[in-house]
Length: 227
Ligand code: C5P
Image (cartoon, rainbow, N blue to C red; front, top):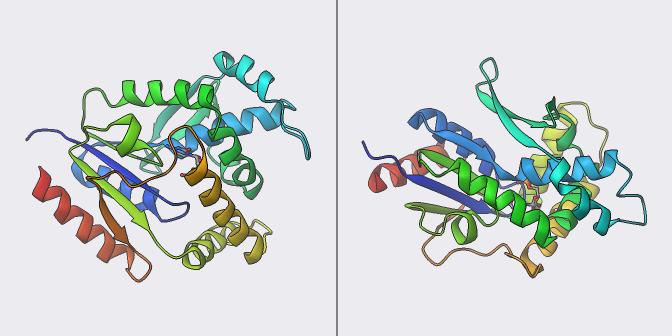
């Protein structure tokens, strides 16, 4: 069977990565979480003192981009690929609210996007890939055979994120998570370079009132119609 490219874009915390992982596993495709790549650059900047409470050294971040080697390695036990920065597994460290609160500012820098988009295009050159993010159907793979655009109300998304963070022991409050989700949407949709926008040929899925199973069934049937 012909392998295709599946692009899943949408707002923050719409469950893109959950369904993308499920779909990739079902099809035997590679899954790439591009948000993790932007989070890795943000994590590097935080670790190296380029982002403080009130300052953000954009020049230094751009200068140091060539020193950031981002890679994915499949974890057999978990059943998905984890993200590595310069050889170190940072999968757990990039999901914090702290990283979330800076990542959209980092992702608005054109030089950062340029580096990561090139890498993403290399990863998908042989197709057989499910990639999720904000600009996959518009910029990274404008010719993807199947494009999905995920939405849900900000409150639902924030609650899911809040449950995920508290579920793993992070001490956060719902209002902060909601603010972060709304703020990231605002920055992602209004940035100059590759703003988050639904591609003309993307299929929109509002999963506010869908269970994970319902969502997966719907996306799988759309995929089968495309294959
Ligand atoms: O998908 P996730 O929520 O982990 O993405 C974190 C952030 O990375 C997003 O809020 C967005 O600012 C940025 N991003 C992006 N382009 C992508 C993927 C993520 O700008 N393709």
